[in-house]
Image (cartoon, rainbow, N blue to C red; front, side):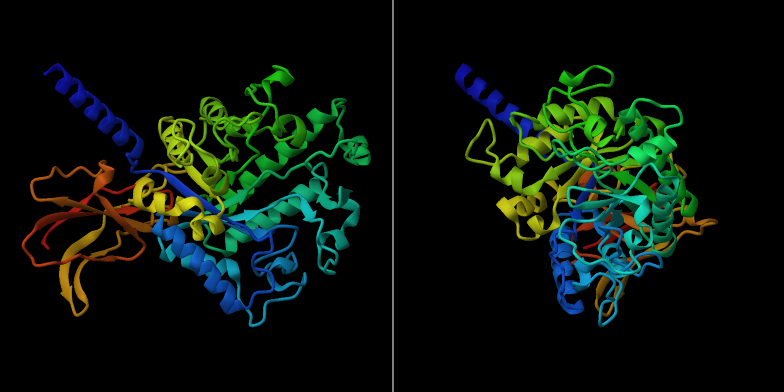
Length: 500
């Protein structure tokens, strides 16, 4: 009898553990990066590139990815119709050459993402002006026009962060994107001052002499230059459109604790944002200059230099003043064996870790191509298990916390194509109050109506209708529709009973 009782306890414990590991929150950031700088689209025809991007987006939609970071400026160039910068060679093969037949990849991506219920965040590299592989610059390029404002480092060209005119120029480019395109976010990554090369100093003596303002600590001065830029970029974005989110994806290590206690450090040994890139992420987070933070914690659990769990817990403890999402690497996650079960990879352990920490609000996956080819079966695992249901975006009440009005005239109607749920958008006084998307919940007969229960969320859509899965009309359900504004504030629910 005792043996049966103990066996039952073991089964119940395993069930609770699995439930805790697989529980899906109602709100979770699920992003993925689409980069251009690797040349994966270079020289493609319009139809070929649109087909490839569609393949990526369809794969992500199947995984319920809800945000796409689309790189549109890799080296002071443009993957969109820019009035300031030349067309990217990573699009047409030649910098400054417009696509033929003409199209605008950013405008196209905004439409395609919104149609799938995904946010589109335009991703730019602020200071990098030329990559090592670029051998020809357009006459329109910033380096050609203002070479005296840039410096060369290890085959790269960079806009000097110390120069006020450079910071203002980048902010002008970013604000132009935000004003002219219906983007949901403006995103930057980990490139500020260049990644250091041993024995190669940054050539900023002249700008230090001119702009030091009495400072003698050059490292502190460089951090101040970047601080000023981040504050200015944040203000430029929100001045253009107050609802557009400003996010950053820094290198995964802020500061090693072995390198002094001036700022908080982690038990790691790698390159550092604070010391090596002059990027004081925690200061920006605590000042409210970024709206979300996605540190690139790409390493595996158990890594000798930059251990994944150590870093995730460190960021969760120190960077909770703004929404925190973890940058995850698909390929490294697929290659690394789970520490407790070497027969499987580390996706499950990483998901369980992140979801166990209240200050971690989701993940962003590097990168879309790996999801599209289902590297290590990761995409299947996300679609079938960890992201099997849709999720709403995390709230950002520091930008806006006012909910939109509720949907009007919710009604189930038969159409020639089938049975549909229809509604009308709520009225709105301002753009911030407009309903941008809608959440659809379903409850079986006798179930309590509780829209906080994520298991009942069946779809999100930017349309004002939803196709109902009619079978034989013998099952009773209550459908609930809510409106979501640009910051995913949710309206009061509206119910409609149907027979399916």
